[in-house]
Length: 209
Image (tube, rainbow, N blue to C red):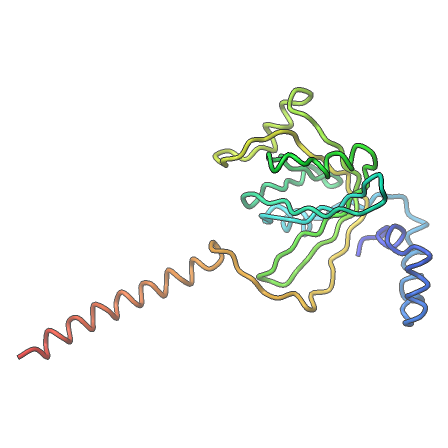
């Protein structure tokens, strides 16, 4: 948990529930320590490496009605870029043209991100403030965030100034694997299967009268 995560996440209502279950003393110490330190919290090499390997994440924003909205964002591994130790961004690909997250950010720039690594049962939660950058305003940034060779239309970029983050508990994460993650094991199994087929064919030839 980064230093200022609790100042954002642990509201009075949250602290009341923590008190009910006996975890408030532990987390209150973190809040008191964070108040003495100016923010936001910089990303370290661990977060940079982790985010640069992701091929998807979940983005939460808040609309004018007060309702939260969670959107899945996906792309090739590395499409989520760490621009510097306080900033992340990605090329925003054309989707179903609803533009709910884009519109929400225009009214309230606070967002939350959860980036999952199902294979290793890890997840990183991020609080930040997002801004949308259209291609005509900053073509250099768009080119920096666009993924060469990926078949998608880039309509804009989204840049998030990171406020705080937390490596969340790994419990109850069901391991899942992408095709790319499975391929090394599958390739080995295919080689073994091919060798066994060749061996069986040779044995059948030897058994023929």
